[in-house]
Amino acid sequence: MRSKRGWRAAGGLAGALLLAAGAAQGAEELWSKLVPRAADAPEYFVASDGKPGNAGTRESPWDLASAAAGKQKVAPGGVVWVRGGRYIYPVRDSKEGGNGFAVSLSGIEGKPVFLRGFPGERAIIDGGFQLAASWLWVWDLEFHLGDDWRPKTPTPQGQAAHFRTPTGVLNLAGGDGVKIVNCLSHNNHMGVGFWKFVKNGEIHGCVIYDNGFLGADRPHGPALYTQNQTGTPRRVTDNIIGGNFSLAIQAYGSNMDLMVNDFTIEGNILFAPRREARGRCYNQLGGGGSRNMVFRDNVVYGFDVRLTTKTNAVGEGNVVVRAEYGGPTPERNTLVADPAAAQPAPLFILRPNKYDPRRAHVVVGNWALAESVAVDLKDFLKPGERFRLLSPFDYHGKPLAEGTYDGKPLAVPPPTIPWQVMTGDPKELAVFIVVKSADGQ
Image (cartoon, rainbow, N blue to C red; front, side):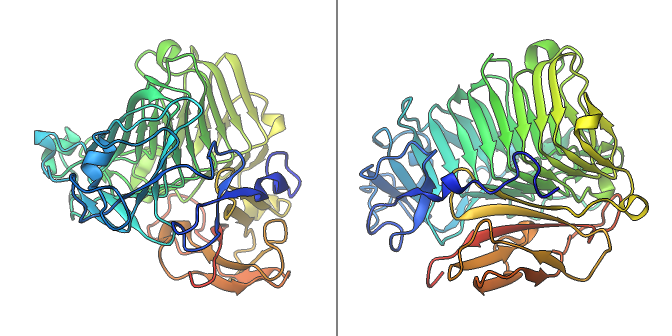
């Protein structure tokens, strides 16, 4: 499986534009050639103690609310660096409008604005985003509710109205040319809402886990709830999803032939289904009336695939383990009902991030349930480069391995899954994030 189309290391991404001196702690590669980024683009700064009346500089940063809402003057193509800290949305009661910071900051076509976490720092959005913007890239931010909001017993139907917290959700309500890149979403009412009026949208490289709650009627809180009725492409690429209380990808609407069309879902890793999710461990990828639904080169463990589109449906190159595949051309996919019985071929996949040349996702099939797996990074790292190998569900925790790459495979234990899984063994599929490290980070 090492040679599966779409999963090879893409050497062309290694070249990157360098961040302007002074803003990134040295000449660190942060942008791939696929990012429409000028080296002399203006830079602005946001901090958790910033103020609307400040200048937006490193020494005099803005607050997040005014910058995100487009109330500050940001030139097209500019970068708004979000410094480390917890940004708490002040309305803590969902009944009173606790849907997160309003985001309307926008660029122009060909010159998007970048709202990005500052390199080496941890910027946490506590309360969510309600986004209606155009030509905006939201990048390297962590969405996490700090409240202990999740009910200890199943809550009555009605969801967030009972919790007295904001939703924490990254909601994309409208706009054009919006990209969500390398963000984390966890411990929120739901992961990401990517709704029907967003044109030319993409979510790439994100990690979405441990969202949702157990309701009295059923589990609630998919990782990604998405629709598209704009007639423009919607891309869901290279994300890691697991352990939410409901579906992994819910591409669904009350009128499928109108609301769920033109999706490319590619290169994602969907695994570690949560036991409390019960019968909600699946992917709903449109319906019979949907059009132009592509599901390609994904790794799926424990989440059934429901792709019933009759018009221009593509299902190919996927690895589906311990789950049912209900889509076109099953012969073009690798389907493994039970690795212990089937003795499948070795599985090792490394997929570089297409926008950040420092980062890649790695999947290893650990069919023998060994205590450690071999992680071969030769297609991503050069000898002498420093790196960190991370658990996707503990991204800011202690690395599973770090150091200077010597060209040899690493022997690493599978990352711990911090919840009970619905099916299989938590060690059977090992998923990692590898990041190239600058000196001192």
